[in-house]
Length: 197
Image 1 (cartoon, rainbow, N blue to C red):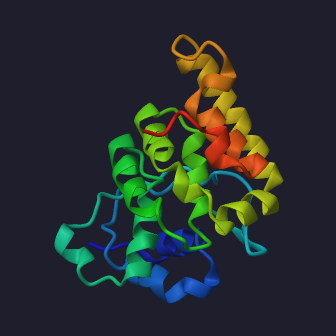
Image 2: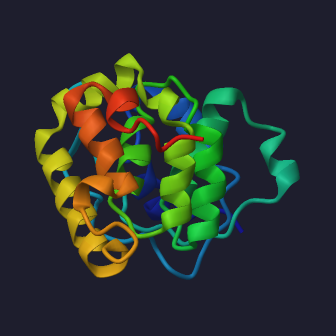
């Protein structure tokens, strides 16, 4: 059973209207779920001046592998971005690995949001791929979204204080904080230096 129209409409708002056909292709393979995506968004997000409404959490099971064969590259990236919002951290990590190298201008909010979450394994995927964050799309996204960046910084600090302070006694040594600081300064590789393997 595929997504109901109201749910599909909610998820369309997470992506720019210019890629509506790719979004619809991706949504066509997403199985329905008993739980709807969260009503709250990851924060105020603009991409090329367009407000996106990216759900904080998404609960649909992953589509079967054979369903992905019908998707073009852009629709496959849409699908992977959507699953970076999944309630299961392993699913988020798996789909992050797919999208992190994308140069699509609408991918950065899905990646940056993951820095403001608590799954260390997800942070490490970002750290090990930090060179992919040194793209014009990330520079534009950071410049266009100061409120979202501030909110993400607050989340990073909060999770560091709750979960990571013992491993990284100084906030400046916490992986997610260093990558975020690098994004904000436009020097992601040098700021996060020494973290990537």
